[in-house]
Length: 220
Image (cartoon, rainbow, N blue to C red):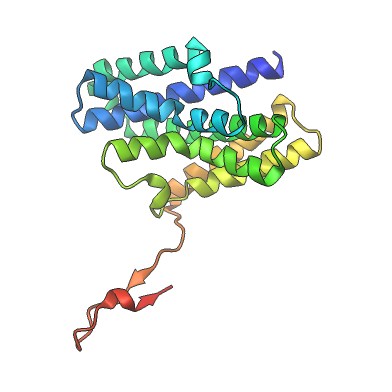
């Protein structure tokens, strides 16, 4: 299997995973069939569309290659019809979401590097490719985006992007090193979920007896 074929399969797998995640969120919000399909499409392809526009690859693959849109639509529709069974698989959905995060981090960073984007920019593009679909999904379903909560999500993607960039600079772009980078993101995300790791947040002080607004007095 060539590297290009492996990247295509990884991309399509990530599309399916995020489409399932977006469709599941839409079903939970009781959206109709079109709404479920649309949220699934945005969750699956939003990050990739952003990536392609930034690296000047137009039209984006989501529109130029029918396999991307078809994979997202078929997966979202399958979730719509099978959601009673999937509703009992919350842990499985979280694992699949972590897998999609890992796959999109690797493919997004690598495509940016192949487009001759400098390493720092490629790392940011890889991270945004991975989290962009989830950001769109959460906004469409009126949820605070996961990337803005306390969970380790975007940081895991950024760590994976940096790893891919380092491998690229040293010429290690074969399937094995890239798989290792994906496993790093996947592992970080699952461990963070398991151990409830989180980034620091600003903590508000309790109300003061003098009536002052505690929001003006934060602990970091």
